[in-house]
Image (cartoon, rainbow, N blue to C red):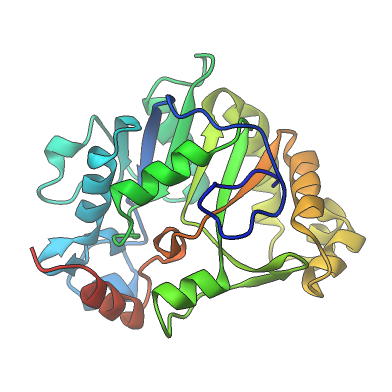
Length: 272
């Protein structure tokens, strides 16, 4: 987590120069729990199909992708929103879990055996993200196996006053995680089993501590862990080079998963 976008207000440290000529293939995670009460309350089969100004929120995400000059092919995992059929290159059936959908989405693009293939994995429930913001994130990406954008709390609250997010307090500041990440497609088979183990242990404190390390976990819980230390531990656990990307774009970290978020999106997005 050492390389940050040039547009960030206070980069934490320097990192390798990002390529501005790279094109990214994209996997859009558009599935969801068919029993999701939030989706059901709005007459949608899954959350990304909830309408904002009469259009599924996933359609906003697909348009941002297609308007971004840095995006190549797009695979959509889950039911494609009405009006989005022409914006998708590959349609993939929802496999029920985030990890499962990530795996089948990347595989559907046929990139795992091709060198130097970078993939953007993005959820379909961040409709406020614009093509320009997405391009800024992609062009700032360092050369690493796994890149995870994060947003400072002050940037979230300045952009969307009163927004409710889940934050993590680190020595470098307070951050919320993004709803997209960037990866080297050829490394997916290497780190996916380890990522599955961490996710499986997330509700078992002793097992999670054994994977992460008790000292690291305690420093994380008490806000004494730095981004650099967290980066090093994540890289060690997953067996790939992991970096954080601090971005000022609050839309990256603002997904729509409760009524207040939906009202925020309606206020923030223009009427078609």
